[in-house]
Length: 225
Image 1 (cartoon, one colour):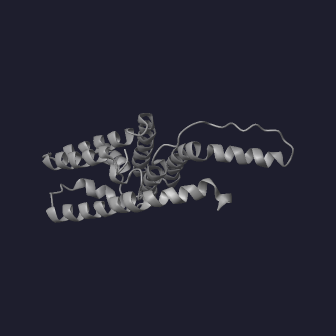
Image 2 (cartoon, rainbow, N blue to C red):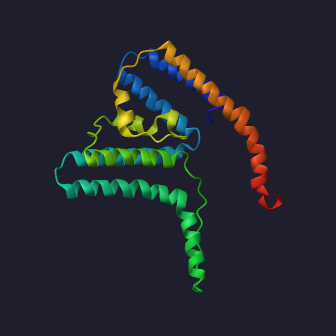
Image 3 (cartoon, rainbow, N blue to C red):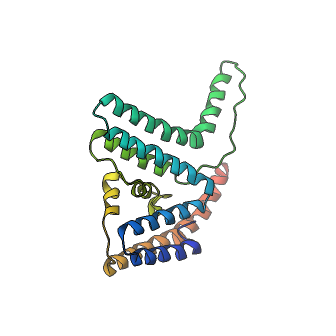
């Protein structure tokens, strides 16, 4: 689902309206969590499982670090978080690149190596939510943040749809606490937000998309230019 698509232009106001109609903070956050996973699953539904796995790893890593005073045990939980998240990121984003470069290196030594190329699509937003969850476990490890004990709030922090696929990467200290507040509708803030969105749509649809036609032409034939 693209931000400048008709689908999103229907999805966003519906979610916003229902959010403010919900009476309790708990129900509101669960609504946002469901909406965020629905939003993400419009790309490739199966890749939502990777985001869920990353969420589970770092949720329990945070709890594990909070339940021990031993530095070595905390470090082990941090290493498990790093390996799990960066391992997934490396596999999907850099495996083919790394494998091809290994083959090129070995060819200098006349070592025959047929690189394995994986035909997989890069999960949308994997870099954003990977480094976002890692920022959480690092903050907990350093003692800058208490662990989040509500799994649903933590899952919402990882998957929050307005910044899931295009960023920015949000620090847990900036975003998590906002899910603990019962927000009231504010007409002035809504108006300001809509103006910012309209300005962003204008820059994307009117300026960027039209410049992309020229830029792509050059990039597709760099020798010709």
